[in-house]
Length: 119
Image (cartoon, rainbow, N blue to C red; front, side, top):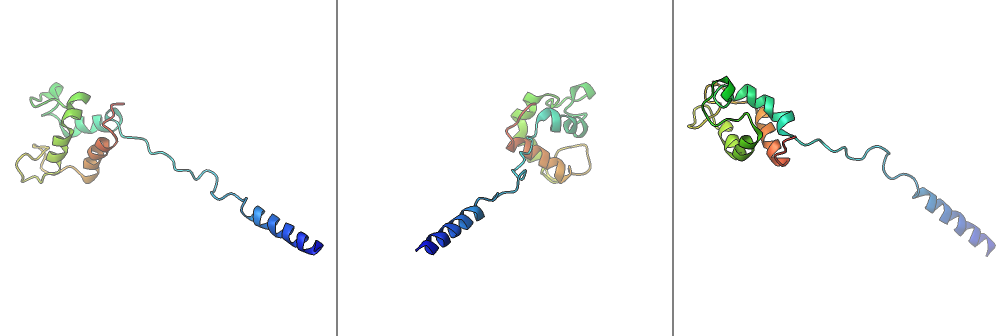
């Protein structure tokens, strides 16, 4: 009977200790990806790709996109138009011969997905 308790105690200890080890490696927690913001990610792209038409200081006479409020309110229309092909009516950027890169279009979409943050 004494042997049974010793074997049971050893088995229980081994089973308990085998499950006590770290189940996840330390430091492997998901690192949050910073959200896109107008000032950090879009402002410079808009100044470069939408000028001069949508930048009043550069002689633009279309709806100004040099400010957060206008870009935020028109984001769905902006994305729709920059996704068009250059031969489609309403294509933007109108004066540029080629479509914006997929990575640039993705910036606009991701900003919308992230909640249209200003800063």
